[in-house]
Image 1 (spheres, rainbow over the protein chains, first blue to last red):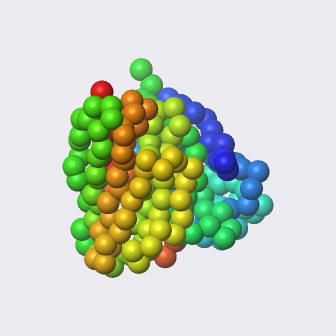
Image 2: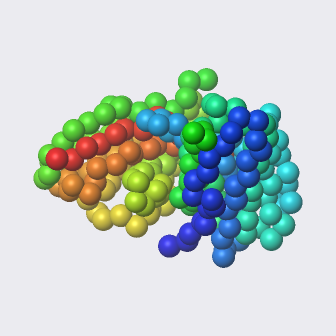
Length: 113
Length: 110
């Protein structure tokens, strides 16, 4: 099946640092979505991107829909402890139904010891 | 508006049993999707329902089935449970290309 390559798999953050993660695919996507999931909960939508080149912010979070439509990145500026969790990218293929998303494996953010 | 709700939140079953999970989408949302989440495979699409019809189906065996009612509420059923069915089952409702998830049902098969 289709795959989204999300990197890094995990990273440690220190409060105040900026964080960057990305997703790439060999296929073109029409929509990119970024979610955060806390333990025992469902993913919560952070940012939705609908067209190539789109750059969208949500507070300290910024995400971009790559020009080639095969990638997207998420940046978190000035990280805080509550940013800890697992971040997922998700995409919708051209012709795919609205309810069928393909997910990356996730990027786990932890606090530096 | 209330978010997506799922019941039950936790469930323990034994191999060979069957289970039914329930999902109520956000009011006004007509598309409901189901996903299985496991540490090894991540989030995998099970199926999507829209206006009581299955619109799309993932690559899961026929033991996994679902349905949607006229009020958009959805249920999924897994028959003849296997140990590998232990997972977090997530329901999501979709509106204008944006998908919103419920808290999930954690299923443990012993």
